[in-house]
Length: 299
Image (tube, rainbow, N blue to C red; front, side):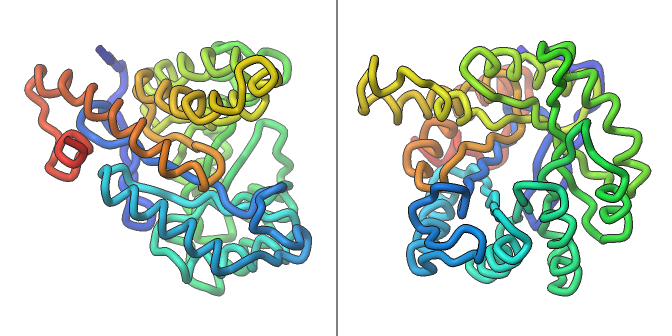
């Protein structure tokens, strides 16, 4: 089903392997925590939150990761440098999984790089993210750090088609490699329902042309669906999220940023089902997933 021109790269980040050939490797699922509007956050700028609830959410994600065989990561969001550092410090202690360092602006992320170095977390951290509008100080800070994995966001303001997304990533790769970041994850950028289709096609084409692990934040298609509740009813949100997050799997995606970590109980089974179904294609081609794959975990 999937035919790629390039050999597929796979990287290890904080003990989690991401990338490679679809059908034999499980999709990595990334839940977001401490984002704006998250119910457990009590002071967004100071980084205050309900620590007990945060730990419970992290443990639930890990539970479903164990049940399904889909590896997990945490997308740790911070609205200020102080908040991001506090969030990273907490998450690093509460879980052993890789952490996406997701400050809401480049200066916040750059400030947090100092903490990451001091805490010895470089091998577990993914810089999230670099956009085509980056400024040189951001890459200079990355070059000085030991962080060697980053998400590149395929956001092209002039051309938001599949072609435009690939053009954006092609332009980002050379300066990122020059900054010493060798582990590149391509986020093909979802803003709404229509863009999810283009993003899924871009996953397939990016993997074929570039070989780097690719995925997307599929949950944005649901978060921006204005008529979801008024036209479809509240009950439509959960299945909508599950479908949106399973679509990148069909495109050969290596990872899915599934949005609020609270959604883990519904997203992990849905993506595991898709992984298990598509593993049959690999078997028919003589490629066998290992025993930790959802194919062998969820029956």
